[in-house]
Image (cartoon, rainbow, N blue to C red; front, side, top):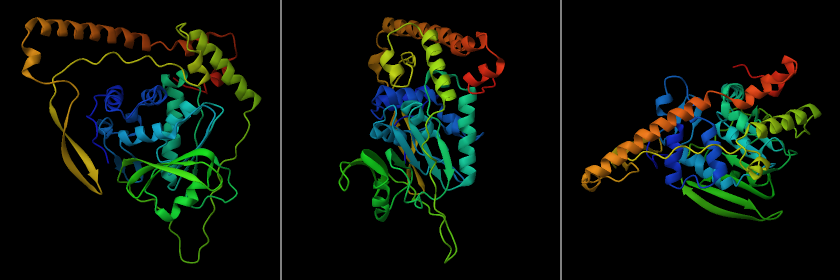
Length: 371
């Protein structure tokens, strides 16, 4: 499913479109989406499709449409310190965005059936930590991925504050997933062609709310020969942070504050994420109808969608207004150039490298980043 918003030229442009269409509604979710480039999770040769509001699949690798991920992130109502379980964690794109919000004192686990996809997710996570400047703007809860059938989770596993399932769930499996929730927790899953939010209100009571009509591929179970006993999936243990990790977290937090621009952002820091500079205002252009596609089952159906700005002869009646608009666009381009120049210097990383510390300790503070 997809095609709800126009295609973007880049990740920021896509996020702007999702905001204008009200799929992204909160600042925390916007920050997470802007911090992680969706195109980085595509295979080489397919990146041109990354900023369209469409699902993508190649072999076992799959990404849902951006509008779906937006609704999921909003429906989960994420907060710092929560525990999160991703059933069918795939590429790790969603889990990584969740980790930016729940912060280092949260829990972030994913279960994925296919071993090659788990390896792919781990590679993408490692690349994000080591090469993305966005990583330095957040306190992060790293996802931990395990290989296994998410319908065979051990019965003595701990419960979670937030759970998401990224494949179509049959009604018979709904209760199995609901009992993995803590009381007060939220489960988001596609069931009976509806993206549904389920809140556990008591030991045996739940409230359900339909969010969006969707079409997901059904949840795949591990195939095994008749009579073979299924392997129970052991979720990662919930452990206490080591003293070494705590030191790294608080040193990075202090340096991040020193490297900040001095604005009062204490609340955002306590929330586990640093304020991301807002993208410049989008330039005005004429409204036009463009082709996009919507997944229906296994078919792609073309659909006409209008871009964001107004189109009509009235925009061009006044030559003076046009001149002013062009001047404003030129100024925006100059401003953007200044911003991009500033982005080349990672002040946070530079401060760590300038500290009078052993090189091994500097690397540890940077999560062993190699740039």
